[in-house]
Length: 124
Image (cartoon, rainbow, N blue to C red; front, side):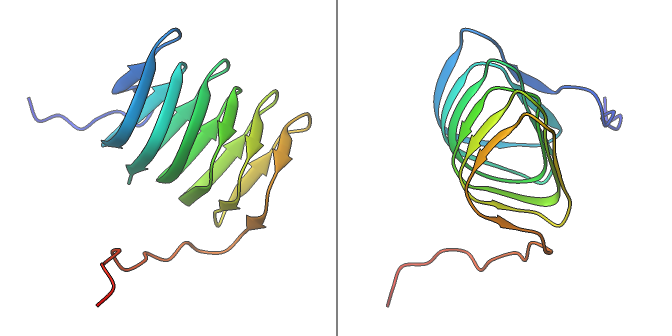
């Protein structure tokens, strides 16, 4: 079946009570409600739910933080939304930003287009 994925459909869920450490690369819309530590990359949407605990470098198109705690820098190519009662400790970079009243944010913010960086390479 080669049908297009609905923009609001969750394609993967890391539910409450789950723990994952490592690198997460995905297509579609992924929601994290559990514990995640590592790196998250995608050209799609990441939703971090209430009760989630995320310690990660996040580089995706759209990030929606519905609650929970995020430790790490976020690069969102399209948009970043942070809704109360979320807590975010880390730097953020996105051309479009929404931070709800009641959100706890500690870090620096850059609101400008996110340029694709050259792939990391070993020094000569």
